[in-house]
Length: 457
Ligand code: PMP
Image (spheres, protein in one colour):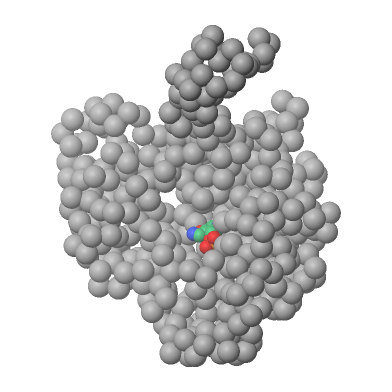
């Protein structure tokens, strides 16, 4: 029987026991109304919302819709025949290990190979400091789990990667965005944000940044800004998490020096999702030794160990295939698509639109004329058979209603051109309404779109 000073657990078990008359005095117990599971969620789950892109997925993946919304890597160039032989050999040669549990930190030989991959970007890492994760998304989630208490501030570029914002929300972080321009994160804005927070007695837990071929902004952090940003963070005692899944997908063959190559205290996240195969779900974190053990414990509690099979598959691929030339082929395919998108934007988009010009990666970030709300416009775009990701999903604070993200990674160049042509027609129709009723009328209609922040792309 429940003690009077302990709240009764209104769960189905106690209700059933009471109903069955089980236990001493059960007949006198007040039978609580069983709560539905939705009433039992932990408070921290309140911030978990479906990403708009996922919500749109069903409709955007209809064949007649040109989807410029999702960021699916284009895997068409993968040598499926030899990968299939590699899988067969993996089972023949190492089946019993590949199909077994492994180390929570990841397969040792793969961790060594990961250090070789990172060397391409000037990063000297120790395999002992690499933690293999189920995609770099898991590394992001675990790092947030081990560093962020509810209400803690984290800094992120504005806009920022929607999956990172999802993890930050799940652990109840308060995200403070820092503006970017066409050269990436603006050091002066970072300094100002840290100054303001310091004035309130707040030290952010970390800066989360995507220096290369940003998702969603498409811009790359200028080299001269890199040491400045690290210096500012050092001065204010702020840790840096560098997320770099696109770094090797530059269109002019240039590989930008990782922030981690300047400073061994930077936490570096990498992934094979864009340089090999996203479905294998192999990513990693390179962390300072003081962070490693806590991260491995968190990883163990999440998955016991990352999948041995896919790690060994990646390891064999790196050992037996010319992965560098595969990455070049991927980048060439993406460059062709980027060119198609930029040409179409130039040809079709109405006056008053501006967009970033990416030198790598998957995304263009588009700003539309005042009065147009990209979230409100999305259903009309989908009706016109084109999908995009509206800007507000990439901010934690409601900004971004005049922006949208266009992905050029997946569709053919012809489909990209057609998609942009359709988008331009939808935008023209929106602008007609703005011209007829005035932008303030439109703003009201769409619940207050905000322009970009000062300096912001
Ligand atoms: N970071 C960024 C910036 C991304 O764009 C993505 C995937 N879209 C990830 C992390 C996660 O990638 P994965 O988990 O596949 O490694």
